[in-house]
Each structure stands twice: as C-alpha cells, then as structure tokens.
Length: 74
Image (tube, rainbow, N blue to C red; front, side, top):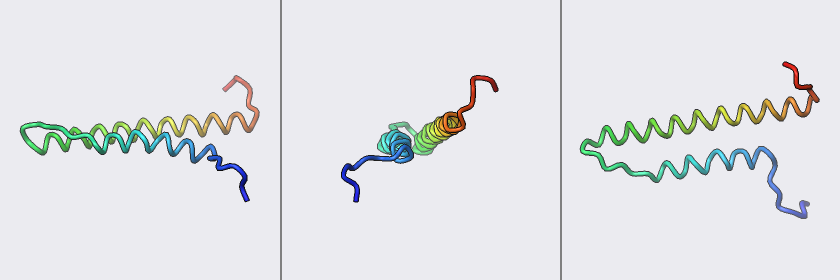
C-alpha cells in the first residue's frame, strides 16, 4: 500500500513527453489546400516527437552515468 501518490521518474518523463504532443494534436491550420495543412501538422508532430525522443535518450544516459558513478571524463 502506498501512502503517497508519487510518480516514478519514468512516469514524470512520459508525462513531459505526452503533454506537448497533446497540445499539437489540437492545432488547426487554415490553409487554402487541406493537404498542406495536414503536411505541416504532421511535420510539427514528427519534429516534436524526435525532440522528445532525443531528450528522453539524454535523460536516460544521464541517469545511467549517475547510477554508475562515472567521472567527468568520456
């Protein structure tokens, strides 16, 4: 039984990643041709997803280095 409703590191990271994606899914683009608006929306979502994956990878690497006790040298 948990006394406090605390989120794990992974849950907090996933929440940070999904919040911007939900915000972009509500965007609408009023462009003359419907195809260009969809392409732009898909491009923005893809770029956001790539940025999120990059940030998640960096966070995981940082946590791994921290847990291994690595020094500043690479």
